[in-house]
Length: 518
Image 1 (cartoon, one colour):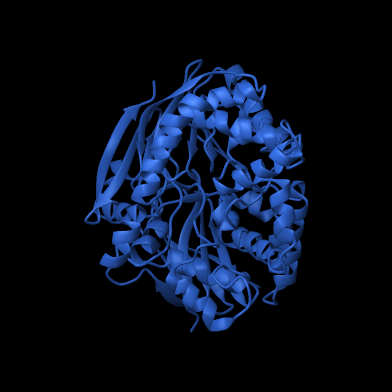
Image 2 (cartoon, helix red, strand yellow):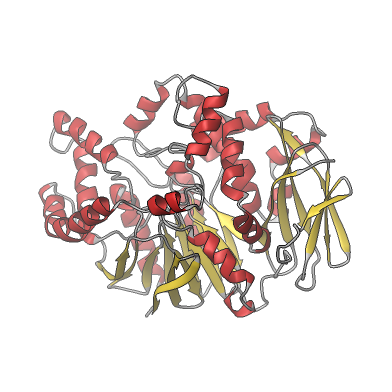
């Protein structure tokens, strides 16, 4: 009898369709029973692992409960858990989005809670299990670092040590280890139920691959010189395509995906080579594949932006988005919508002083004060993660200008920095909402260091350093109006303009603060 390894995960949902993703222990036919109908798909195989994504189409109403069968045997729902249901996108559009980033997958015992804090995503699932529809989100956005490939849990390290003794000993090395990493991340019972019944949209950040991923051309050269990184990046992007990206696509987009068509055409034969070739090319030639995507949520338009793989790292002409990706973003922003929700794993609007420091560092890395300072500045950039939009000043100015010209409400959702805050532009209806981490807090010492440097010293010296390097002022000013908060957190955006941040105490969800975007 085939077993369910990971899932079911409710992924893309719109007004008349829903997609459910699973990993199974053996090749099989996956059947979803929902609303008195059966929907089927065969699994495809890569590197000895078996996956399917089943599209439920022509839906006319919400599904109160669905079940999963593998070769006819029912494997879901689990006994003692609430039913997994499907709520279609309302005709009037999305009402609420939940979002956050940076979640480590460690146990929930007292010792781990003392170090890592409570898992707010887990507490959110427990909260929804006993809440009415009014509190449920229409979509959960996971904005990066869904897994930590470069800093795995003790359980994951034990798994690595059980199978090899070659570098990197304390990091993920191949697809097999990525598969186990995702299994550990997504099979806690509360998390598993939440992901089975709330639609999710995801995008990667650096730790899904490795800290500082694509921060600069010297970083790429340093990593390429190792004997293990080429295999790691192929495995990481391949695993991301399977575990995260496929479910981001609509049924029509997925039907047109050439890699998925290739894997399904193999009819159970292993397609690991095809996946690896795709991932290797996606890393070497970012324009060969697009990880970004967009969805219409009624009057609002969601644009999920790849700010990692699509970078142009040419010294002296660094871009957060290469020309192809930038043209795509311009096209998506121009599409009809009353308001835009742009999801960028890394914040667009940092505290202004930190923005100035990153501008200054980029100029020095490009040789503004000579080659010796450039080398020192590159080390500084990698040491303290100076890699946000501010460190790609040309792209920052391009996006700032685009948002000013739009003249419509724009809400930018981000994570990454391990604290949460709200920033508002002074020259238009542009807000930056940050929620990070879901579960991976900074130590108390680092929290105070961040407050001192990013909200105190940097405020005083960041602008001065940028001026000394001859960098012009940004196209507009902005200010932090709420936060920072450093605890584990998850946030909701209740459309059109209500943002609420939550943390967890004794596994109960608690409100940190709420604000209306003016």
